[in-house]
Image (cartoon, rainbow, N blue to C red; front, side, top):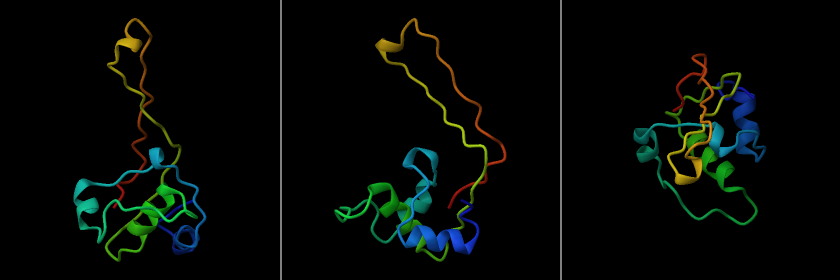
Amino acid sequence: MDLALEPFRRLMLRGMNHIPLSCGAHTLAAYRRLPHGWRTTPPELATDLYMWQQFLEQPWCRARSGQPAHAAVLSDSPAAAGAQRFAAPVSASVGRAC
């Protein structure tokens, strides 16, 4: 799903969510520009979809997608002490969101 393309943006706005909250990003400045910020989600929608829809409804939002998706798992918790820690490299090909 490439949110730089209008057909995919329309799918998200109609309720098809293929981007988990942990696989997306936005800047603090973009969040502060939202008309509502975090708000109570209607019961029929997933919270992540509701937030992405709010971003995509903004004319200034330039959504981008990249592949492959990577996530970094970092922990300083006592439970992780002695365990092998790792962080998957974040792909340089992923564009900046919003």
